[in-house]
Image (cartoon, rainbow, N blue to C red; front, side):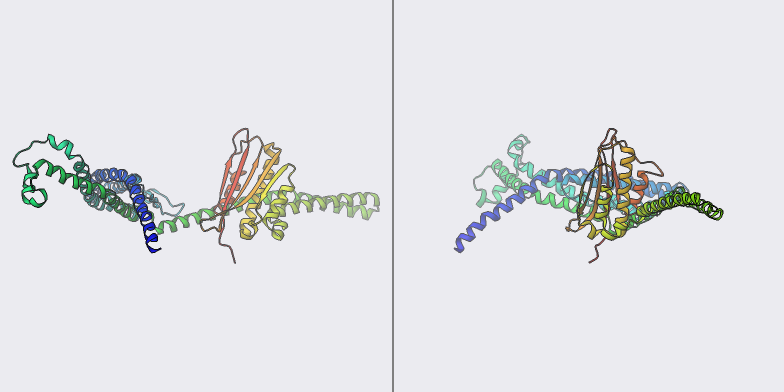
Length: 459
């Protein structure tokens, strides 16, 4: 039983080795091209960057020195990007782009822009890579690559092209090898000895070529990832800028919403309340004069104005914080919006969204959907609408994004306009670091999606 198990395991091991070896060979041509090309790139970057940089340093006492140094840093960035682009040939994972602008939003000016590369460590690391590190490691890898390619391919084919080389006593090294190793090549002529030795060397170098060239390529990739790639501080800087942008968008969106609410109150309930005040004053005069019928008419009219003002206030408060959203959650509130629309509405709402959406996300999504439905009724000329709300899982399986789509069969042509409409909705969604996507070709249909990231869910 033990013998059978061992024998069955050996072919599996061999199959795994040869499968890995075959996959390594598929990456070998690209690695060879990269290792040869990056040497040329490194030599060019060394000559260009060294010339520009030291010229700029020598002229720093003059005004022209600073722009030359800045230009050198930009050139170093270009050479680094070219190196990362060439790494695509190796089949290795792509290296993420670093953060080139770490200035706070809103900062500008001539000197801030001019000195931005000088204040960013990535530019200096790219300069060191292009002027020192890359030439050194590229020279080493170029030598090893050319040795392995020439010995491997040349040794395998020496029996073809070796016969055309001029031969003489100085070049007849096969005879000296046969004389030195009589126990191995006793009685052999010079030519068979040469062919045999070249063939053995060619087989060894060719067989090990995927590992050697692949290792050199991985070495370049490791250096590039550490020096030309993205750092953890880049993610933190991007996070800070995203938070600042989201906060600015949220503030602007709330300002627009407050102004709109103020205008709606002024044009609606305030006017009705003023009219109600006048009616009550007239009613008081009629009551004092004893005209009961006129007083009754004014009372009924005042009650109508009071009811209309109350309805408008309820509608406005529903747009700010609907009671249904607070009492029953986002899924029920979205269903209520769909049910109150005078169109054919198809809904696909995941009830699990209530458990993972924060109050801020729920209010924003509700407001966006309500506005989109209002726009569809007023402007789209549609007869049917589809509302879909779903959760998008992350790599860990936990929900990370809320996706809400409103699709109608109207005339299309919806677009962003500065100061109102979809632009205001986009700012509201951006305030939560989300994104509003509009796809509305002329003739329809219109598809608008709000994608809002979800924060950590409270236990």
